[in-house]
Amino acid sequence: MKVGILSMQRIVNYGSFLQSYGLMKIVEGLGHEVEFVDFQIEKPILNTSKEKRNYIRELTRNKIIEFISSKPKIINLMPNDKKEIFENIWKYKNDFLPLIRVGNEYNLNPKVDVLIVGSDEVFNLFQKSARVGYSLELYGKNNNANKLISYAASFGNTTIEKIIDSGKLEEVSENLQRFDSISVRDNNSGNNIKKLTNIEPNYNFDPVLMYDFSQEIPEINIPTGYIVVYAYRNRLNNKEKTAIINFAKKKNKKIIGLGGYQDFVDEYINATPFELLAYVKNADYVITDTFHGTIFSIISHRKFVSFIRKSKDGSYGNQEKMEDLLQRFNLIHRAIYSPEEIEQKIVNEINYFEVEEIRKKGIENTVNYLKRNLQ
Image 1: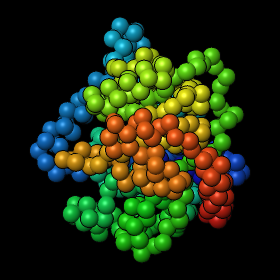
Image 2: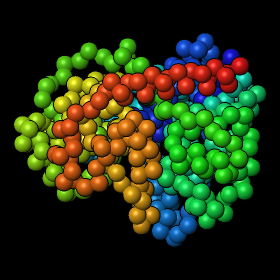
Image 3: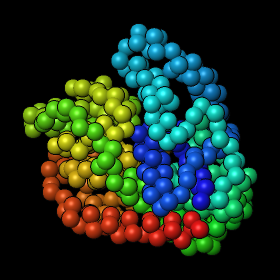
């Protein structure tokens, strides 16, 4: 069958790429032809004058970034903390996206046998980014498929109460009714779907957990005795940075930064997605504050901790999706809510035999769900 995947594949992010790649390979492994589908980017839901000003600034900033990221000579003249941003964008477009056969031209509303929406936060109404916004095509509008399904879709930290307060309940509900089958990755998303559609969704793990990347991970020269810090740029506060530095000194470990640029690490590595998995796989410890950073740690069988961040004063929290993920693998003891918890929790052993048993059942569930719906 001709299968379209409508996801967040153009977002410059390791997790976005690897979940897209993983789902593509799983579907291809079932004998189908895959193409990635783009959505028409719409304006975000903006409730305050501050959000509106930030949106306008981001539009301008994005145009500048697009221009500079296409000029390698300009990028090379920049300081490291700025260079990383533009190098990532250039590499993503020129080196990574071709691996999933995505080009510069947007593939909007192609005719396909089945359209899969997901994985990632495709159902999150409140994406403030000008690169995503509140785009109804993510909820099934204007699709050109014989069958419409989702896979491991997430609302992020968008609750049913937030949807009601936004005045978008009826619109979102009406569009979600177009789906022939709905799969989500977390309880918050499942509860939203049940209340919006009266459909009992299937629960599936993120594709990065379901696909075996062992053939893609390269053999590279990697140092020993290091801690990986995988976090979003500028999100670790000074107390968190200090706690990480102190732990590394106590254990006599080097700190390697992956993902977002960190100014306190011993070395920041602008790796390819598969090289990143190699660095995580060989780390002594991983400290992260992201959903996919946690997944990278799990599939690599590392000792890790994950910062849980609550939504506060309009900031974006990860609590809903992170606690759900850790609970599903009986790893909630790896969650940390303050930097003081790093040392006491990260050194504890993890029962990865139990983790792999859960993954094995998840893979079976994923294959069965896709086989049922790709026909």
